[in-house]
Amino acid sequence: MKIHKVFGPPGSGKTTYLLNLVEQELENAVPSRSIGYFAFTRKAANEAKDRAIAKFNELNAETDFPWFRTLHSLAYRCLQVSNNEIMKPEHYREFARSAGLDMTVSAGDDEFVVHTDNPILNEINLARIRGIDLKTHYNHSQINIEWFHFEYVERAYRHYKYENNLMDFTDLLEQIVQEPEYLPRLEVLIVDEAQDLSRLQWEMVIHLAQRANRTFIAGDDDQAVYTWAGADVKTFLSLEGDIKVLEQSYRVPAKIHDLANRVVRRIRSRQPKEWHPRQEMGLIQYYEAFDHVDVSTGEWLILASTNYMLNDLHEWLRSQGLMFERHGQRSISENILTAVLGWEALRKGKAMPMPVVKTVYKHLGTEFVQRGFKTLRDIDPNNEYTLEELKASYGLLTDDIWHKVLTKISDTQRQYIISILRRGSKLMGKVPIKLSTIHGAKGGEADHVMLLTDLSPKFAKEYAYNADDVNRLLYVGLTRAKESLHIIKPKNIERGFRIE
Image (cartoon, rainbow, N blue to C red; front, side, top):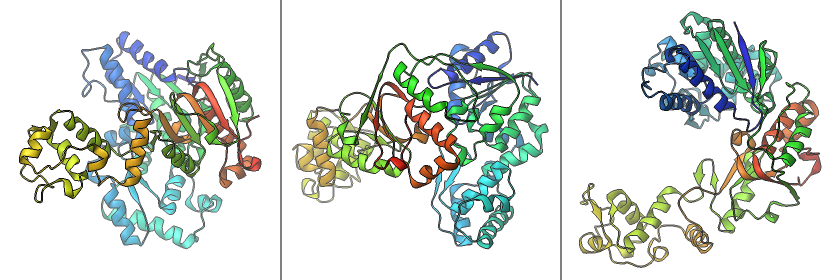
């Protein structure tokens, strides 16, 4: 079992390095079906597949790359599990009703992953992916729930899955670890974002490595910010193998590199790394409050350790008439944007397709459409329509400017859009400002970064007994910036990141 460990500091092109490895193996006549590329997200695995296909046109995405996927997806394929056997959001809701639990459920970004906000289920899953006995995990957790109720939910959950012949995404990993003979034998094994793997995922990776000729495991222990969710960075550090450090960052300028290195050297358990910044010096500035920073021009990433700390910034950006994105959503909904831009396009004489016309009518005030036409029941879905056609045949009574006729848009939203337009900003195109937690921004970057240094009471306490995790979080936040870093001092120095 030959293992190569690849450490990729911020902006050093780790994923590009791995994709180049794939290309080299294919050029050396290694069959694509003998290469496994396992990433933390389906998007990252598909990126690797797409790049290989672009380079080697004769290869087929569906048939030639069976092992470019997530580890959960690999277990699903190897175990030949039916989609009907996988727990879906509706199953979690049904279980919650049967067990008398309050629970909000949503599908994750990747297949097989479902998010719930039930603390008991989340802790049960955490114990499983860490490979810890349930009672031991409970005794070390901070959950404020009696053991008898905790145990009841765990038994009820197992019973529900058994009675309905269902598996959750952790079951997939548990079963494949118990039956590793179903895993493929690969010529080349590549694993990305290794610092985020759980103990259970590591067991699967070790089984894969034992069956592969060459193994490349890549990540950055200094960016391991998901230990609270079960990530096992210690296994990555202790795994024996050749070590390669990617030494050049293509993102981080010199001043920010210097500050980030002072922070990262506080981490007691880590792989030492020497890496180089870009030649540009970059800029670091400190502020007493976030509203002292001019974010009206350029590309910005605004970061906080906890989501609720972004709420005041959210409102401030709206008051300034600035467009931004949060949780992957624009600060103006797609429906409202479609209505406004569709209406103004109609006023300029352009023909709009039926879905846009319907969205416009949905936001028109009733006084601007004849009775019986608001729902457009008789409109042809395959046609496009001009303003004159809508006035002639579909009850439209006005051609006035959007903010006078789209009265189903709230006054607050209308005023916000008007203030954006008065700034000369565009409603469509790339959003210049993104709000995110530091966890959510890992892997991301921007020209300019604003970092709020306040910590929640939980994170502030962690400095006393688990400073490594807090310093890793700070390190990730600092190293998102390509040009300038704008640091907002904490309101309470006892509850803030320790920058210097």
